[in-house]
Image 1 (cartoon, rainbow over the protein chains, first blue to last red):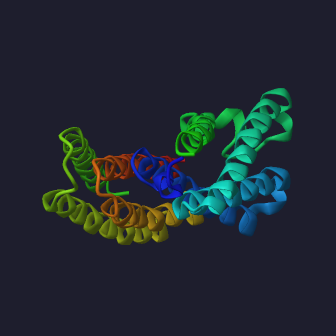
Image 2 (cartoon, helix red, strand yellow):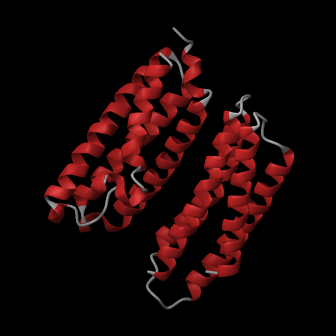
Length: 130
Length: 118
């Protein structure tokens, strides 16, 4: 049993930084989309907003690195993984429902598949530092 | 966009990334020269923000203003926040995290370019 603090040290520093970059960009992107062009693709933009909230929650929970916040991070990252797999599959199956790309469309292809790899690494890291 | 400035920012960021990786590989902490290079990049990004907004106002092409300005402003946050986050780590992973932050800059510049020419 390691200290919960370990979550934010070592390789965790890099993991949390990448989460932070996605939290910042997803929040800004969703904000602009919803404020200025919501009617164009409401489902996609709402999903963008959901993704932004999850990235922010995961970033702060991982960075706080307490026993409780680790549980929050685990839940957030599990939802993130389900989201990227679900939206990724849906965007291939019914592309007409996804006229505007979200961060999770096509398993995060537009972002070098980082959105697909990130939750897997996140869950592995949480397990490793348990 | 002022292309020479963009290329200079990309080049400096990649050089800083290589420097940070070298520090991490030798188990060193983040050094002052590395932070100095990032300071220069940050000044360049500020200049790019001003130039970018002036050109956005002046262009008659259909550039997505909110996204363009959003990326210009967002680009200013990455290195300072990344550096603070990385400095709080006493192991080699601090320099590693800063290398990742440096890698984000060329990606942001690429996006900026795509938005500008779109």
